[in-house]
Image (cartoon, rainbow, N blue to C red; front, side, top):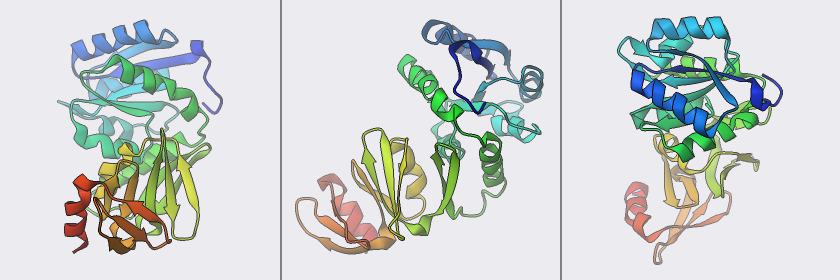
Length: 255
């Protein structure tokens, strides 16, 4: 899937252990995304592996937790990945793993129509990426070594993804539906994901969201100036406003 998908080409598989979940999602797709053709559904890890191998879909809606295992167990049993992923789950805790692999989206149950439409709308953007297999392999490798602290973050690009060390990132700035990462070497990288999608992941690595549009690396703070919320000066000389409701937490963490 190196070219943009035409409306009649989106062969889709839904893997969810709940029958009602599969039925509801299929009904929603028929209503809001008729270009998505559900060619098979599955309710277990074993059946999920089988239908993916049989139908070679363009898109897979993949439940994370199932009684027989996880969606990641399905990915681990596939020799190749030619499809795009949209994770579905009742639990938010797996969202970080989904973002690491740059899945198209992560939908929480019960699935909302607007969020489903937005996820399908992202499909053509991700269809231009040529290394889906490498991105999924990166996810599986991260999960297998999850006892170790990851040192890098994966940022999607038009042609694939790039890996960047957390320690090389000074700050992130939200720009509408995009996020710009500023690095120590002066480079800036614009990513087509909202800044909120990176907050949970980065917070585990000494980053903090100090403003609705700014996440900073606390290790790169040069100084703090008092005020209503105050301001921080970063190692690159940038001055970042701090929201009043985040001021106390910031001071505490800097201490």
